[in-house]
Image 1 (cartoon, chains in turn brown, red):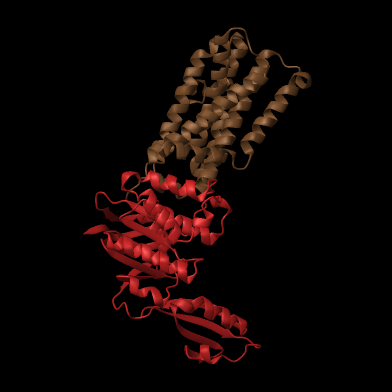
Image 2 (image 1 turned 180 degrees about the vertical axis):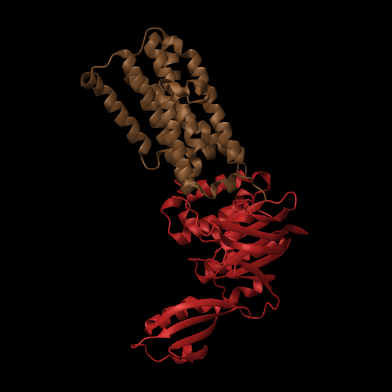
Length: 224
Length: 274
C-alpha cells in the first residue's frame, strides 16, 4: 500500500513540469534526424546515445529531487519510514531510466538479430543513466542547505564522468571516477557491444555505491 | 501519562534561532495551545515535534507507541486524487489503529466535505484543503495530534466542529497541540494549558483566564483621522505622534486594518503576557 502511494506520487513528481517528456522527445527527434545531419558511424552514434542518456537521466533526477523538496515537504511524515521512501525514489528513477534506455535504443535503429547484444546495449544505456541518477542523489543538498556545494559537485562529477578516461592524470584514480567515458572509449576501441558487459556491471555497482552513500549521508533521522 | 517530553530544545536556521530552550510536556487527555506572532517559531517547533526537523540541542522523548498526526500550516503537495480516494489512502496508511471507514465517513460529513468527495484535492480552495488535511491528520486516530493554524480560512461553524473532533480525540486518550497566531476568546475554554511564544522562547500562561494582549504601535501622519470610540478604548499611549494600542491578540489584524483605513502608519506589534 505504502509503496503504491509512494510510487504514484513520485511518478507525478517526475512528470509534473514536463521536463522528462520534453527531454525524451527532443532526444528522440534529434536521434531520428542525426543520421542525415551528422552522418555518424555506429561507434560514434552509440557514444552520442551514452552521453545523451547520461545527461537526460541526470537532469530528470535533479528535476525530480527539486520537485520532491518543493512539494513533498510533509509527505514523508505520513509515510514515517525514511528508507522505504528513499528506496522507492531510487526504484522510480531506475525504472524511468530503464524505460528511457529501451525507447532511445529502439529509435536508434541499431537493433541486432542477436537478442543478447540488444539486451547488453540497452543495459549499457540504462546503467549509464543510473550513474546520472546516483550523481543527482549525491548532490541533492543543492536543493536544501548547500546550493553551491551541490552545484559544484554536479559540475565536477559530470566533467570527470565524461572526460575521465581521456585525461592522463586521472588514470591512477580511474576506479574512483564515474565510468561513463570508459564505456564510450571501450566501445570505440573494440566495436563490440558484448565487450561492454564488465563496464555495465561496473556502472551498476558505481551507481549503487553513490546511492547508498547519498541515502546514508542525508538520512533524515525521524527522531530527536 | 506523558506522550511527549521536551527538554531545553533549540533549533537554529542559518544562524538565527527558530526557537530556543523550549521545555514542556504533552500528556494524555490534554489540549495545549501555543500562541505567538508570525515568525515566533511555532511552525518550526511543531515540525520538529513531528520529526521533520532535527533540533540543534535539547531532547524530545516520545513515549513508545506514539502515533503522530500532523496538520501543517500549508501543505504544498499537489494531490491529483479525489478527496474520497486520498482520505481512504491516508486512513489505510495508518493500519489497524486508524479510524474505521464508517467513522471516517461520519467525520467527512461532520466537516462538511461530503459534497466534495469526488473533487480533486488540488482543485480545492485553501479552506477546503485545510479541512481535507485536518481529516487526513485525524484519520489515523493519532495519540499525538499537532495542528498548525488549523482554523485559518474556516468559518465559526467549522472551527467549532474541528474543536469538537479535537476534544473527542483528547477525551479518548490523545494529546493535542494547537499553534495559532491569533486566538479567539470563544475557544480558550477548550484548552487545558496555554503557552505563548515570544522572543523565540515558549512560556506558559499560568492564568488561562487571563487574556493574551498585544501592543500595536502606529505613527500619526498629516492626514490621520481621529480615533473612533471603538479603538480609543484600547489606547495605551498617545505621545509625540506615536499611538500605542493595547488590544486582545484575537483582534490584532482587524485593528491594524482599521487603523490603516484611518491613515495611521503601522510600525510594529509585540505580544504582552497577561
